[in-house]
Length: 131
Image (cartoon, rainbow, N blue to C red; front, side):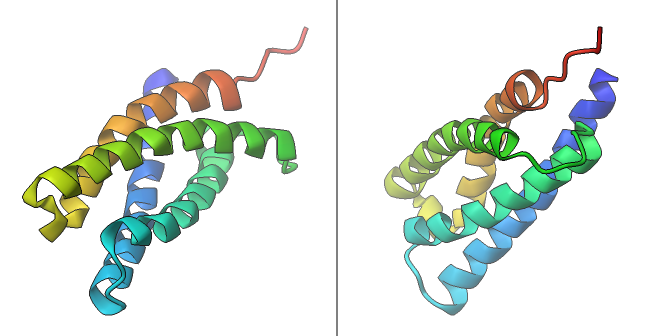
């Protein structure tokens, strides 16, 4: 069960990465928006998508949408985003990865994913068995 859940989380993460990266590339390459500012737009779209996919397919959450659950997810993901944005910002600022922002995004996303999985599994979607 744990391996299936982790695999599902990774697959959802790939979808989130593609959304984040696609929007990032669109904003930086087509609209010439600065790489850090572009992430402020691309990340929320990816986060909402991954919450919906994780609650539906990975953690089989309660079918009714819960504000409390979304708030916990947002809090965990927000903390993961701080990790993600910090690593991303450092990489595009002090290395030549500003020329390749999606590579910086991949490195940052991988590091944040470890934290996000632990938080989603233990805090957001941790369902107690009925008595």
